[in-house]
Image (cartoon, rainbow, N blue to C red; front, side, top):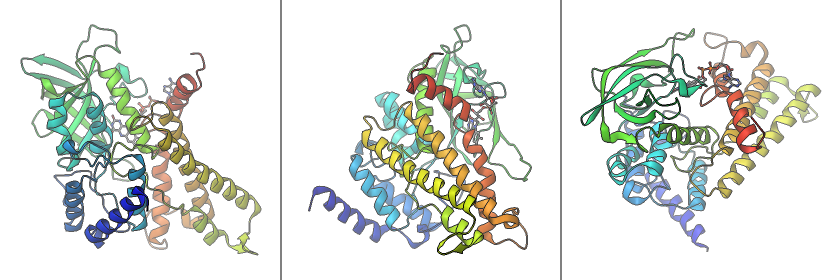
Length: 394
Ligand SMILES: Cc1cc2nc3c(=O)[nH]c(=O)nc-3n(C[C@H](O)[C@H](O)[C@H](O)COP(=O)(O)OP(=O)(O)OC[C@H]3O[C@@H](n4cnc5c(N)ncnc54)[C@H](O)[C@@H]3O)c2cc1C
C-alpha cells in the first residue's frame, strides 16, 4: 500500500469513529457562530475535527491545522464525501481572512488569530462594500484614524452577509485620505462586540435577508490588527478576494473542506418532470440542453481538479476569477433547466401544492442569481480574465 492509501485507511477509520450521525446528510454547518446554537452533534463534530487539525487541514500544526499536503487534502475530502459528512466549519474565518493572515500576518498576528479561527471560535463578517463602493471598491470611505494604540473607525459598510450573527468583521478602511485612492487603504480586524459597531438587517422582498448594513461610530480596533501593513490594504485586500473567489469556485485548499464534489441533481430532476421515452428525455430541445449541461458539469469538475493539482500556493491567483465565473454560470444554467422542467411546480417558494424538494429548488434558482454578483460581478470577473489571464490591453 502507498503512503496515500495508508492515509486514506486511517482517515476513513477515524472519521467513521468520530463523525456523529447528526452531521451526515443535509443540515446546518457552523461558520463559527458564538451566538447560534446549531445542536450537540454540530458542536461535537466541530470540536473533534478542530482537535485533529482537520477544520483547516493544510494549515501548519502550530496554527491549528494538520499540515496535510494537496493529495492528502483531496483524499480527506473524498472520505468526507464518501460518508456524506458535512464540513465541520466553513465561512469567512477559515476561508477568507485566515488564509490572508497566514500569507500576510506577522508572527504575533498568526499566533493570536489563527488557532482561534481554526477552532471556529467566532464567526466573521466581511466589510468591503459600501453604498458608494461596490465594483469600484477603491472608492470606499470608511475612515480609520490612528489614536495611540488603536484606530477609531467611522463610516458604513453594506451587504455585510450574516453580520447579525457574527462576532468579528474584517474591513477595508481609508487610513490615509490624502494619498491616491488605491494607496491609502488598510485591512483591519474589528471586534463587533462593542457599542461603536451597529448592525441593521436589510430586508428583502421575501421578508428575509442574510444582508446587513454595518455602521461604525467611533468603533475601536487595535493598531496591531492591521493585516499586511498600514496603507497596504489594496494589495492584501485583493488577495483576500482571490481566496473568496476560489472558495466560490471550489478550489481554495487553504480553508475548510469546501468544494466537495457532489453529483449534480439536475439530470434526475429534469428526467422526473419531463419524462422518458426509450430511456431518453422525451423533449429533444431539453435533451440537448441537458447533454450540454452534463458535459459542462463534468468539464468543470475536471477543471477544478486540474487547478488544484497545478497549484503552487494554497489558492490560485487570477485563475480563481475564471473558475468562479464558470462555476456560477453553470450553477445558474442547471437551476434554470430544473425550474423550466418543473413547469408550474417550479413557481412556488412556499405553500400547499408544492413538495419541499420543489420549493427548495425554486429558492435555489432565485438565490443563484446572486452568484454572478457576490464576490465580484460577472462583468468584473470578465475584465480581470481579459487583463490578467489573457493579457489583453486595457
Ligand atoms: C449574495 C451576496 C453576498 C454579498 N456579501 C457581501 C459581504 O459579505 N460583504 C461585502 O462587503 N459585500 C458583499 N456583497 C456585495 C458585493 O461584493 C457587491 O454587490 C459587488 O461587488 C457589486 O457591487 P455593487 O452591488 O455595488 O454593484 P455595482 O458595482 O454598482 O455594479 C452595477 C453593475 O455595473 C457593472 N459594472 C460596474 N463596474 C463595471 C466595470 N468596470 N466594467 C463592466 N461592468 C461594470 C456591474 O457588473 C453590475 O452589473 C454581497 C453581494 C451578494 C449578491
